[in-house]
Length: 268
Image (cartoon, rainbow, N blue to C red):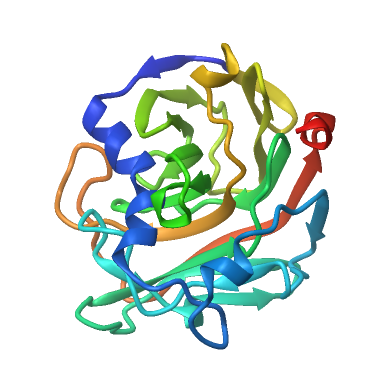
């Protein structure tokens, strides 16, 4: 695997990292059965878990429905775009009209917040201009917290690259791009981050590809929700290019998600 890391522009950072905040400010928080209560669903911190073969525990996850994450998207979240398939979870972009948007897209997120530890998501991304397959760990003002976020994403315009970013108390930091050395749209690979009070190490297939370190106040430190997303972009930007619907749904595959809680959580 090649570790070629290049700097991206501040505008790209804001768009990629702002997704978590925009998503929660733009519309209601929904479960599969109706509006969720922030107090009842999001006030508890979860421990280690492992989801495999697409058999995700319904009590741990929710499908977003009926709203969008912000103006950088041309689709709205639809629960119909998150389905359980043989061996994996499917997140799709389709031409099903949702509200005022021409397209619909899929987001699956945890009910609970999760803290320091190792997060790993095995997925197959989608190669197409104007789409993004991403994983975010987020909390912010909608939950009475500072905006902290850890994000990784694969833009459909070049699925040989991984984008890495993070936010600390509302300030975005160093959006970088890692050369994967393979095409993420041709098979399932694991992507993750090991988050500790003094640093974060991002990994691909278990190997470190980027790391940061610092004092706890210089890094994300708030427990957050884990969000799995596949969406299409509005407009024509250097970051994602213009989305053109190919006449059939596009689908990102999530094969497994694992969280191994760090012992530091137990002492906080």
